[in-house]
Every structure is written in structure tokens, then in C-alpha cells.
Length: 130
Length: 162
Image (cartoon, rainbow over all chains, first blue to last red; front, top):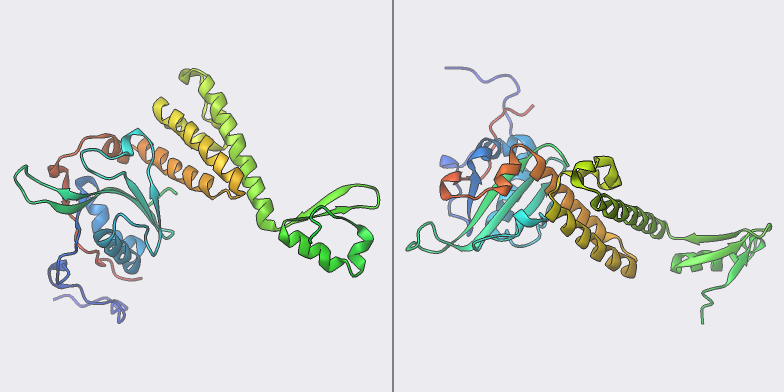
């Protein structure tokens, strides 16, 4: 058994939820592009837990509205106008730490005969340039 | 009735009209004539900032127009002036940016507020940066299937604080 490092105790950090999931599913299902799955996994470590969870709460409840925290806007140009029912692409700035591009679809079906459900897809996570 | 085009004299600033001068500046602008005849204007700092922003955006628009007049192979990023980040956009997007910027400038000038221009240029700059990036560019330009995505759980901390 390994002992925790000195200073590892963080009294104000809440415990991780069982299996990393909230108790109930949010209204919008959230997906991330495979190439940015690692970036998503490290999001809280990179931008802070509060900022990361604020973004998560916003995008899984009201991806089609301006956030109460942080800023968002629309990506422009031919590639970002939205196709096949997907929205125009949105960029969301996490205060001073990064930017995330996403699109959403309110009635998405994974199969032609499948159920419609609202989905958000994260396409890009950028921790660098602003 | 307010006299909006009143011209103050330098001597007014030392007397009782000083308050009227400042109030008029806060309400829009106040004109002052120096003793050598030089006309001066005082206005809110935000007003000056907006004028400077509008001027900069207009120069950027003109640079974009000039760059678009050249063959793509003959263009340099410096041809785009303050919009150098736009050099990587394809022709269709460049022309859309030009049209968008022209519209935003007209709105900004009529409203005396550069917010429409600032917002537009921020959106386009992020677009250009992400499209030019070797990792994100192909994703934004590509066609996607469900297999390209995985579930994104609620974020949690992993690294020790420190």
C-alpha cells in the first residue's frame, strides 16, 4: 500500500462521484471527438474543476444559449454552418484557459429507426491559442 | 435648451463655465478654442476608444480588399494588415469575411459602437486559427460518423493539487 504524498489532502475538493457519473442523465447527451478524448479527460486539471463543470452543466442543459459564465460565439465560414440537422458550430471560451468548439442536434438518431434524442458533439478542445 | 455646438474658450475653464464644459463633454463632446485659435474637442474616453477601434477595423477591411485583389499565390500575410490571421482562409471564406466585415462596419458606424465588429472579428479569428491547426482543421473540414465520438462524462480532477 502506498502512502499519500505530504500535502495531497485537499479538504475542499469534493469526492469523485461513483463511476464518474452524476445521479441522473443530463438533458443533452454529450460526446467528444476521439482525438480530443484525452483533452476532455484532463479538462478539470487544465482549466480548474469549477470552470470545467460550469462548462459541462451549460453544454448539457442549454448548448443553444449564451452561457451565464464564460463567453461563446459562432465559428464562421463554409465549414461551420451546420449540416444534416446539426447546428452552426459554437466556440466557448473557458475563462483564460481554453476554448472548445461544439455543435448540437436536438433530434438526433443513431439509426434510421432509432429514437430521437438531443446530442452535443465536442469537435475541438484548445488549451493554447486565443 | 442645450447648446450642443457651443465653443468654449480657455478662460472658461478657470471660471464658472468649467462645469458646463465638462457636462457637455460627458453628453457627447465639448469644443474648445485655444488662445492661438487651435480647435480642440473633449469627449468620453469610451467614445475615443470606439473611434479608434472603428478606424482600425476600417483599415483592416481595406487591407482585406486589397489582398483579395491580388492572386492568392502573390499574397503575403502582411498584406492583410491587422487581419494577418485571415491569410490561411480559403477564397470562399475570405470573401464571406469581407462581406461580413462590411456589414458589421456599417452597423458599428451607425450605432457608434464597435461591438458588432469586435464580435465578428473574434469569431472569424478563432475560425481561421482552428481551421489552420493540423489537429483541429481536418476535423472541422471533415465528415463525421458516430464512430468518431465517445461519451464525455462530467469532468473530475485527476492530478494532485499543487
